[in-house]
Image (cartoon, rainbow over all chains, first blue to last red; front, top):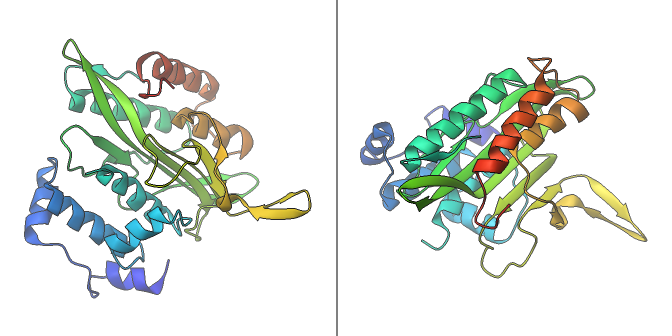
Length: 83
Length: 188
């Protein structure tokens, strides 16, 4: 894994989620769109991308995923198609 | 995999429980889990935030496997039938996160794209006539690829040991259940 991801996973990087999104995730119910977007942004950063916009751009460009983590992020993004 | 229920959640829960039973009986004890969703009418699973199950193949050593699907349902007389909205499966060598081979499907074409929605891609280079191409450049067509097909490929082609000697029948039975009870909106 990249050094960047390790840093992010250690909690010392810029990767954060709001308390509201964390609470919504813990509740296990479908998220509001803003919380879902924040979650996908978080997971995109954890995968080594710069965030959800980077993930959307790479998916739109049909760029080969660089990792299984990006494959997962791309699958999450398919929920947003047309939304 | 059975998937007709009075609610989407019940259909999805049964689907993932049956899938996990098949995985446990064959190639991995790592379960698929429900992923976060924002649409009430959608459910999704993968191996979760860690992202993969580690496999050991006779010939290829340690590998990782990614499995994920996004599902929704149609409702008739109050009964939900689960459908695949998208899937993504990938395999690569342990320690290298980039997938070597992968199978993808999206029901809706991405904006501006016209490629085969069920397709196979990967990083290997393939010679063709006077040139060569990387599998990732093209969307090599496939039919619908069920999770059972991926498990079968892992065992029979890659040489991943199965927890059960009866894996062929387990996969056959699971696939028959899937074919009879879960169709995509395209009539897979």
